[in-house]
Image 1 (cartoon, rainbow, N blue to C red):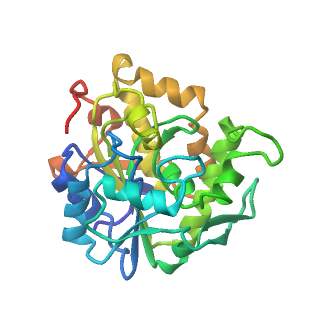
Image 2 (cartoon, rainbow, N blue to C red):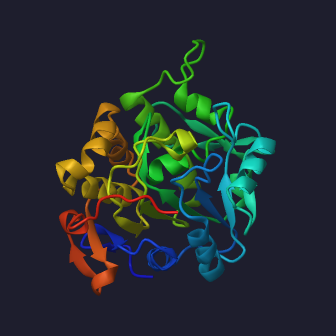
Length: 319
């Protein structure tokens, strides 16, 4: 693993290799403080969801670098394939997440973690099993999101570690009114980000981030087969020990694409006010929006987001 900062900028590693080898290469740059009991926060998807990170990539990463780790998930706030633990277990089986332990964090209740410096919360309710882990890897499928505009590491942790009944309700819903999804735009981004802060503060230096920019529908993986068709080109895999830097770099690469390539994702991000995720992470001191993008395919050359977005191929669905 290389150092995580240089000249007051965080390092974000980048590879165009969208395969198991690329995932392993990106992870191994940022795994130096991941040890003992490791939870891999992964969106495992609704049944037969077409856009989730391929299982064989994740399996190869576990076999190479994460032997003994568990995938960690929570039940959903909406009534669907992962609403209860029993339904969630069936969905995990359908989707092929059977090569390692999968820990549904809120299967046995919740625990509250402090939110330091928050505007909306002083604590967040997360799955009780989260505190059983010493380290966390946020392995994130970067894509759009119906409420958040985009789903990067921040969304993966902020929504994904909050338990399905209390934490997610605190983020999404104003108490005492009928709309389950009434909290939106800036307030939603801030609530979600404060939830993330509770979890990453718990792990301290023992958390790291990998974002896979592939099959980037404007829809979240929680929409499964109903997700909007992908129209944005695949890009590559990024990794960092800085949550703000990695999500910022992904957004910068999206904006560096041509209008034809990025119009759908940019429209989704901006209509939902999704960029507030980034500015609020900065305000909360969660990371650095200044970064160096390191090209792992070209000897560690420092590149720009425009370089990373150069000569992208139009999206073609793959098995």
